[in-house]
Image 1 (cartoon, rainbow, N blue to C red):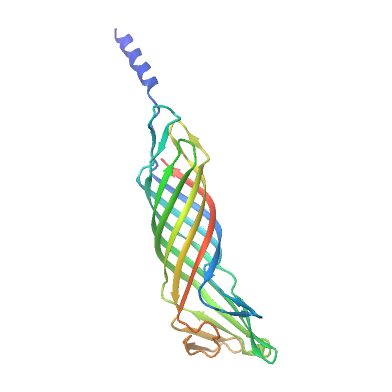
Image 2: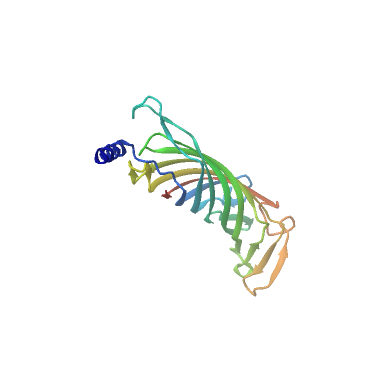
Length: 267
């Protein structure tokens, strides 16, 4: 009798569906490129206007996602064909490295001479946000929308200025703005690469994300270093005679970035 009961219990256990293993946390790493849109005229390249954004350039990001509301798939019709996605919520903390490129202007000064300004900047973002995610079934893609904000620590922000008629007068402006604050919105798509039906989860995902970032940096003064003798003075952008554009302390810009990366899920 004990043998029969034991066999029945084992048979019942074998009929049980595999247990779903929820994600404890996820780590995301991605790279991409951003296209910036400045709202201030930074000068001219010949006769063409240059609207430069510090958000234009390469994007390297790493993020940690913590599920707040797990993503589940409810079988409303009692069959695999009747799945209904349930929206889940996760907290995302992120950082990275954002070097910027572009922004070179060649402003005419008269008599055929030009003032050339080459701008560069890099930022380390420290952001916190929320993602609302929906899943379309086991092993199927998922999409999410996110929003958040944070500070963008300035790693380097400078302008190199040279003159075509007087190369010895060239100098460098080194900016030291207060830490800028930025806001972002994101739209993402994820594709499971290692989905396991027994765990109802995937260890690795491929994801792509489009992110819109809005940021303003305030430059109240900067160090001006002459290349000829390395002497340094301090200037205010409102009164710097060599600052042709923009004569403003606020540097506002937005950018749209596309990033592609991998996501590791621990469950």
